Amino acid sequence: MLATAALAGCSAGTEGTPYPVETAATAASQSAKAAQLPQRPAELTLQGVNLCDVFPQVQLDALKITSTPREAPEQDGPTCVFDADGAEPVHSYHVRAVSSDLEQWITGARKKNSMTTEPKNIGGYPALTNYRAAGEPADCETLVGVARGRTLAVQTFAITRGQLTQPQLCDMSAHAADLALQSLKSRN
Image (tube, rainbow, N blue to C red; front, side):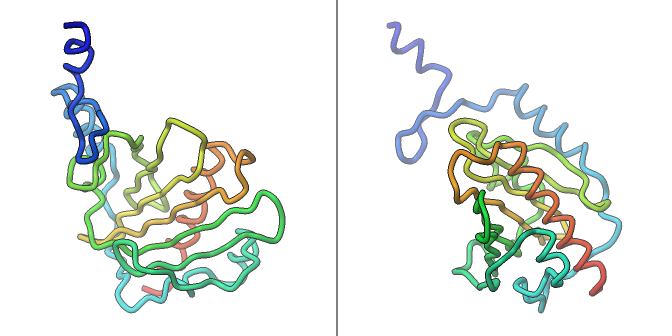
């Protein structure tokens, strides 16, 4: 009986991992997050943009990128990896062009109960910070709604373990997303 009561608030995921059932209050808080997002001031196209060229050299230097940017296998869309591996703490930025509306991470198919999603404003554009709050900080993702059905994703990964906190990773991700957004604005 006690085990049944303990599991009553959870559901089984596809791999048998329990996760909390979304309550009406949780759904309302997700809708409130969506309402906090600013309106997009203009549509910025990602069509034809080589993500490995999104940062000019001065921005690469500011981000401490020391290796040549490289295309990576697509993760929801074109992806470029920028490594800051010249000094500790070693970290990496993955920049992706995703064919989804930003709201998908709040109330849609990309929403994950295991992730903490917080609304942001990056350069006047609606954005989200998305990260796993539990466990050792490993990454943080900033998602910017640059156009209808298009999201610019900038994810910062800690390569050197234990030297970057979750707030640091999220600040680094937001900063890189802001620089990428500035570059996109100058191209449009």
